[in-house]
Amino acid sequence: MSGIFHEGRWYENTDKVCRRCGSPVYESDTPGYSYQCFGCDENFYSFEVDEQDGLYLPPVKVARPVYGITGIKALEYLLDEYGEPRIFRNQPEAEAFLLAHGYIIDNLEVYFEEVSEDGE
Image (cartoon, rainbow, N blue to C red; front, side):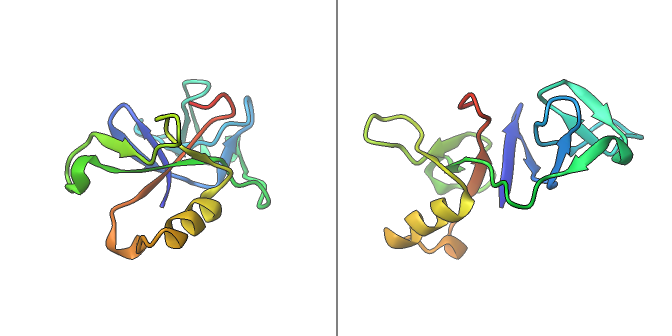
C-alpha cells in the first residue's frame, strides 16, 4: 500500500494531485471536503483536484511498525549503507528489492511511504 504517515496517521494514496502545488492529496479529515493537501495545508472539494499522471510513480521509503508489531504507530525504515532511510524511485522498484532479498511482502505489514521531491 502506498501513501504517507502524517502526524501519526496513515493516509493512502488517492491518485489525485493538488492543482496549486502539484503535491499528492489525501482523504480529508475535515467534514464536507473530499481531499487535503499537506503541501498547501488546504482542503479541497473533489472538483478542485486533478488526476495524478498515470506515468508518475512517486519515490518511496519502505517502513514497518517498530519490531514488526502491529498497532505500534512508530515506524522503522529500511536503511541504506549510510544508516539513512533508503529511497526507491517508486513502489515497484522497492517491491522488487524486497522480493530479491527474500522478503515475502504478503507476510509483512509493510508501508510504502511516499517521499516528496525534497526527500521528506
